[in-house]
Image (tube, rainbow, N blue to C red):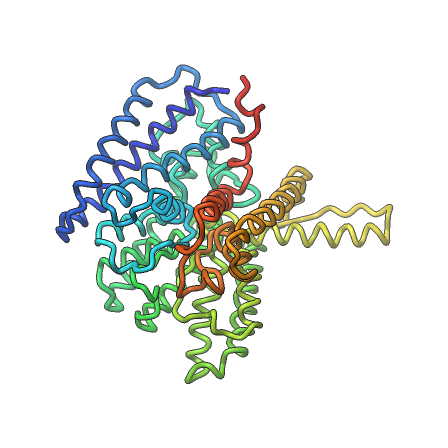
Length: 480
């Protein structure tokens, strides 16, 4: 166990977080909201603690999967503890556990909120709250890999990317992991800037454009208005719908487009399944809610927005879909579980895992009829390794155990089953709003401290793909 390297990496993350807090500081200066005095001490403390950790680079920079997962889990916990301080110090979120809930929801791109009046927050706090989505969307450690040469050979950095990037498998786009991280963040930044420009062209104020885009890019969904996205124009909502879907696509596809391998990109099995699920869900919901809106186009528009928001685990809303028929709400709950593509900024179980699971089930059914047959599972045109199938099965097992235990613990608050189930589904899959008491026009403030702690764990576990967080509780993890 290379403890010195873990501390060194955490130090760099604290320095980067301190640097990123300069954005809300600039907003505070611009709007003169008086919150600069709450950000500056946190920045100073973060920089000092980070400097003490990184002032001497370890001689041994070798680390493996165990260190990678431990580092990722501890970094995200430390990131959240520091990020919650401005909310708590300012008194805008008086209870520290509520501030932690809000900022974990931000960094994990969940978008579940305990705030009853979002518009009461100062501009700099709103900006920091939304900016946490963008930071957490691609991952703070991926950003660090893009700008810093952490190890001599660079190969060990792959363990960090695998532990932080969502999906059953992560590969290199280029031979060097640092170049892969640079490509990911270049695409991420370019798409972010494009959405900001399109929203500005549609008449949205710059402040709103930045916050909405940060939520879309990170598929987070913190709104800066109490009605989320309902008060924006149809054009602005349509742009947001489009980019939510785009940010839910595996970024490897964009890299293939970037190097002009268009056919390979379009053949992506996961992307085609993802778009097919979206289309089917939109058409079914449009048909089901057509009588609730003045025109078929309006029904299609709102159905497309909500489907894109839920499947990409963004969490924005244009209407109170709690009022929709049960058929439509059931589809949305299913989409909560499915999630977006691996290698995207979206959460959930991921389309790729479901495809692999269905293919494995089909093979088992075929084998029961033809016991001596040998069928090789293929995904994206390649044979699926046994290790991948094993990890997918382990993920599903851990997922449903944690989900069931979380629902059981949250049910101690005595809310109805829909509230309990969708509260866990919305946080564990990093979506944001659920149904009933935690619906799109409600929030999580009425839950007990125990339930909030359970859901904070679920948000972190969901964003980090479960195992990096669980490994912290294994005694053997900490043995040399």
